[in-house]
Image 1: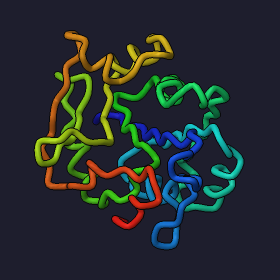
Image 2: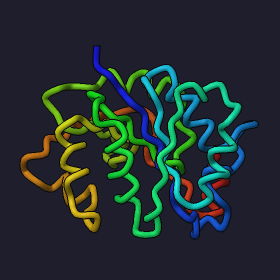
Image 3: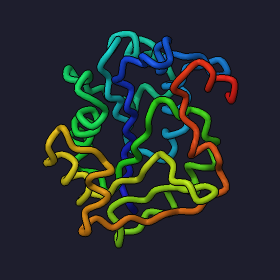
Length: 193
């Protein structure tokens, strides 16, 4: 059976939102707690990459049901961009077959999405990416080879750069979940919760 580790990127400043996204409320829990809860059944462990307000994120998850699976990695260089958080998170889950990489601003995916998504793991590919209505979305399932490339890349690189390399094989999963296209970046986006 494939080993899948969860990776939640929750390090940014949330400057466009004007409120700290990991701790925004969603149905009685926070964005970061909702994602951790949904990842729990499918992931051996869940690594949360923190940066800005790291202690607040840790404290918010201290008593959640997923606490036994949670690990925290702090990105002191979070202001340099999301890719540095991704690199740090990938280093923390080196021994997994797959990494379910989740951005904290996508808390709205239903639980059945994850059940179907992890079934798409395929050793012939380096990354599995969902799409809806011919538009690519997130989260991502990242295999060992691509994870190593991410860790070894220059910190100024991006996932888009890596995806364009001919050696990287990407499987596109067409799905019925429009939430793969959602991300909550500004206060007006919250009207779609």
